[in-house]
Length: 455
Ligand code: C2E
Ligand code: MG
Ligand code: MG
Image (cartoon, rainbow, N blue to C red):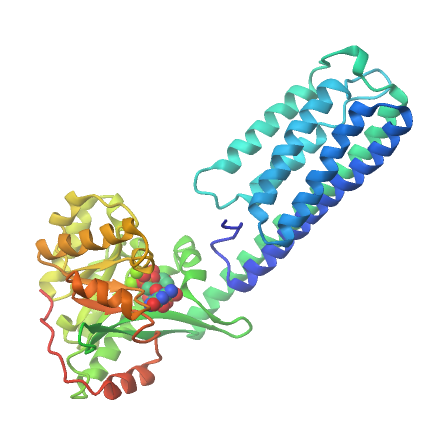
C-alpha cells in the first residue's frame, strides 16, 4: 500500500517526512497503549469490567498500529488509528464523559488531533479524503463541545474520575497537537528550502540534461530523449520527479524548460558535426504550463533561430494534461511549430485525459506507450490489451509508436511482435551524460539509421 509522501520533495525530504510520520504513529500507538493500560487498571480496581474490555481494545489497537508502522504499512496503521479513535472517542463522550458542573467534557479533544493528523497524513490524497475525515471530526467535535448529551445517566463516570480524566485527556491531546504542528512546520520548511535552492540552481546552472537512447527493433539508435537532472550541492543528484512539480507551481518551469530546449538544440548542432551522430533525433519534454505560455511559439522560434539547429531533428514531448484546457490553442500552437519542422510525441499516453477525439485533431508524429503499461505487459492481461490497442491506434492514425520503460527482452519481444516501432528503456541504456551517450552510439556498432524527418 502506498504510504504518505510529499510530491514536491526530494527523496531525502520524503524520507524525513516518513520518519516524522512514523514518530507520530508511534506516539499515537504509545498513547493508546499507555492510556488503555492505565484506565484498565483503574477501572479493574473499581470493578467496571465493561470499561476494562473497552480499554483492552485500545491497547490491542495501539499494538497493532505499532506493528504495522514497523512494517512500513503506515497508511493502513493510520486508517486503523483514525477509525478506532473516532469510534472510541465518540462512544466515550456520549456514554462515560458527559459534562457535569465539576468537570467539562474532555475526551472529544482527541477528535481535533485526528482531524489535523488526517490533513497532514493524507495531504496528497487526490480523492480529497483528508477533507472528509477532517470535516467529520470537526463536526463531531463541535456537536460534542456544544451539547451535554449522554446516552444513559447510570453509566456516566463519577466526577472524581472525570476531573482527573480531564487533565489526562487535555495533556495527551496537546502532546498530539504538538507533534502534528512540528511535522507540518518541518514539511513546509523543507519545501520552501527546496524552492529557494531551485531558484539558485537555475542561476548557478546546476541543471543539466542526460540522454536516453531510443532504438529500433534491430537495436539501432535513432535518437534520444533529453531528461533533466539537478546536481544539488548538498543533496546530490536530484531526479526531475522531485522538482518538476515544484518548478511548475512556482513558474520556474518556464526558464528551466527554455534552458532544456536551448541545451538540446545545442546538442543537436554538435551531433550534426559528427557523421555518426547527425542522423539522431532528440525529444525534449515540455510541461503543460510551459506550453500554455502565450508566447511559447515565439520562444521556441527564437531558440531554433539562435541555435541554427536542423529543426526536423527536434521533437517535443507533450502530455495529455495539456489537452484539458483550450484545445484550439493547443492545436494552433502545434500547427505553427510543425510548420517550422518540429515534431510532436504524446508522452505517457493512456495515463491522463485519454479522449480519442483529440487524437485526430492533433498534428502528432508519435505516441509513447507509458511505462506503467509496459511494466506488466507480460503478466497483466489488461496491460496486454492496452499496449496492443495503443500500438494499433497509433499506427492506424499514421503515427509512429514508441514504448518507454522497456526493461526486459520479453517486454521488447512482445511489443515488437505487436508492431511497436521504437523502444526506450533500461534494457538498452539508462539516461547518459552527453559524452557517454556519444560513446554509446559509436559503440553500438550498428549501421546508421536514417529515420524519416518530422513532418
Ligand atoms: P518521462 O518524460 O515519461 O520520462 C521517462 C522517465 O522514465 C525518465 O525518468 C526515465 O529515466 C525513466 N525511464 C526510462 N527507462 C526506464 C526503464 O526502463 N525503467 C524505469 N523504471 N524507468 C525508466 P526521469 O528522468 O526521472 O524523468 C521523470 C519525468 O520528469 C519525465 O517523465 C518527465 O515527465 C519529467 N522531465 C524530465 N525532464 C524534463 C524536462 O526537461 N522538462 C519537463 N517539463 N519535464 C521533464
Ligand atoms: Mg518524456
Ligand atoms: Mg513518459
